[in-house]
Image (cartoon, rainbow, N blue to C red; front, side):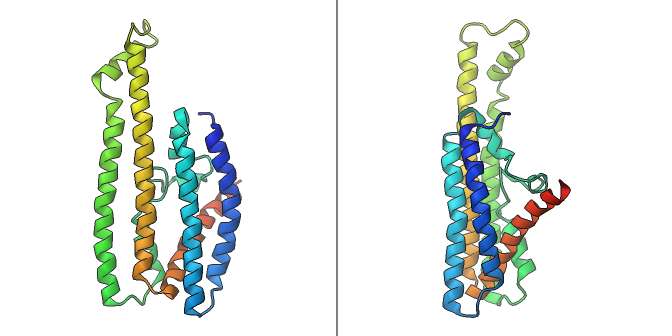
Length: 223
């Protein structure tokens, strides 16, 4: 599928964003012990990540026929694509990274994270349910019947219009599903960070940032 101007523009943004991302990961790695400075860095890094999804949302909204490009992004490496979930990382991945990064969670923090994990998984199921319903709409009898006729005898009057309407519904539904998934990704990370101390948040965000860069670097090594 050809890359549209919206995805080309977003690819250019991502290239610049990755330069800043690498800088932020370096800052997280050598963060000072000052709580105020740690909190400031956490806030800056979350803002940096939010910018990515804001730009992506804008690009998806004008992607038109090629909204599907964002579900298998050309700016992702082949390694990153292995863990794609509705076009990006699965929100609950943050809990695995938190567990891998920290060994000093209090019992209260553990309970809050456990509750948030359950809430996130419920919302993931909701996103997937809506996503499946959108995909299922393409398999509805009228659409499939019209599709089978293409290449056989062509569409009769009205069928082409029905097919176009069905595709518009599909594209709109796919874009909405991705936006819902992205909102859940952002809110999950934000809620986890709220539970953590600044020093703990630094460790988790650094792990997340390093994972993103590692997937990119693996692609370069493979080349």
